[in-house]
Length: 120
Image (cartoon, rainbow, N blue to C red; front, side, top):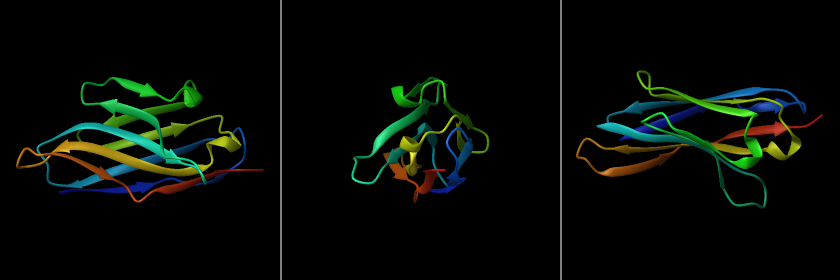
């Protein structure tokens, strides 16, 4: 079973930066993919950025060239560097990890969410 702990959310002014981190703990066979999603009030949860075990990444169009996802496989950490933040980036951000469990079952786990507020 894998658990996730997120950190790094908060209040930032438009144009500012924040860095989110998500640390994994627990036992697993391998991690397949790690990503960040967000959900704004009254909206559905959407993909922000995603990275696979092979190192490929993809981003939502709205965050391309502003956000960067990175992962430390040895430490089981995925980060999201967010630059040039806009008010429309305000949302609860969730870490998502897909992994193979010890018994080789494909499993998905979500973090508890961290609030990012972009406002002057």
